[in-house]
Length: 307
Ligand code: AMP
Image 1 (cartoon, helix red, strand yellow):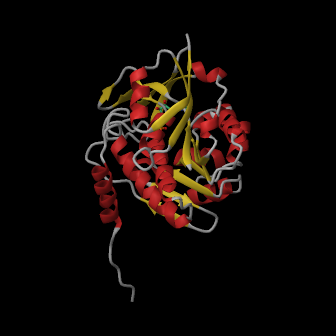
Image 2 (spheres, protein in one colour):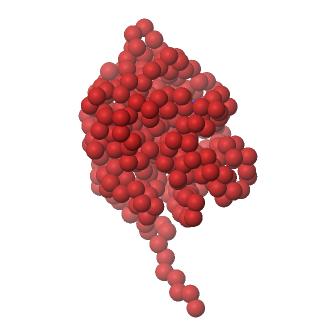
Image 3 (cartoon, rainbow, N blue to C red):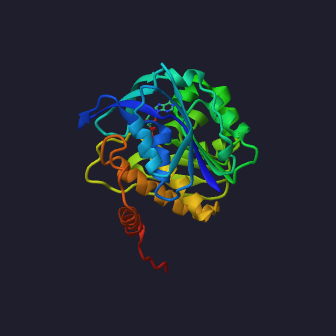
């Protein structure tokens, strides 16, 4: 019964209205596995880095209970690098650089000890690799969640459509949902995307929360109104990691439990944006997580009597 997380482990350079970083640790799988580690200690990571990647960070992941036997370290090669600049509203950003480096020749290998995978988080990565991972598992996981982004819609749409058809839950942001479906209405976009294969769709709307759809139902969770949003990088991956981590802990993949998963994912994402990179989510404690979830409950709870 384990959670397998696949995705980029990377260096990022980020510019926000509040500051700028040189290369810091990032990557979809880094954020997702760290977030999930607050819910389950049975996490296996599959990814690739170059030998420029610090061992100290790999040690930190291990300290969080994240196993890294499936993290390939390529001698003489450079890690994936992404640079982005946020606009003043922090809801939109421009990608300044995507250097695939080690990703270009990455062949994911699933160690034998990872084959008991019950929950699979396919973090943002080349769709062909996401597919290979699904094909390399001998048994079909109980739940497959996949995240992707506009970059892959623009560069690998055919593979992306094949990968989407194989998953249970797809998570994308509102702009990507519109791009993928050619529909402006998110309700119409969701219905179109659900016809592409996934049973559930989560549309992330940044500071405006997240929507969970299946063919018959829809659920909305707000984002916590925060005093300071410092750096939104990784919020989507942190959300997804919290979501699947909670489902893995509770072993319940019903729509009702996914609603709770979305609240836990949103709580984790709200921490992520408070500091640059992974700084805020690397050292949380359970009490902080629980009181953040309580803030969500208080935010949306109200009594109403209909006459
Ligand atoms: P998010 O803000 O949740 O979209 O995730 C940002 C993280 O995704 C950064 O840490 C990047 O390293 C990583 N990232 C950016 N572009 C890509 C890409 N094309 N494929 C995979 N990961 C990416």
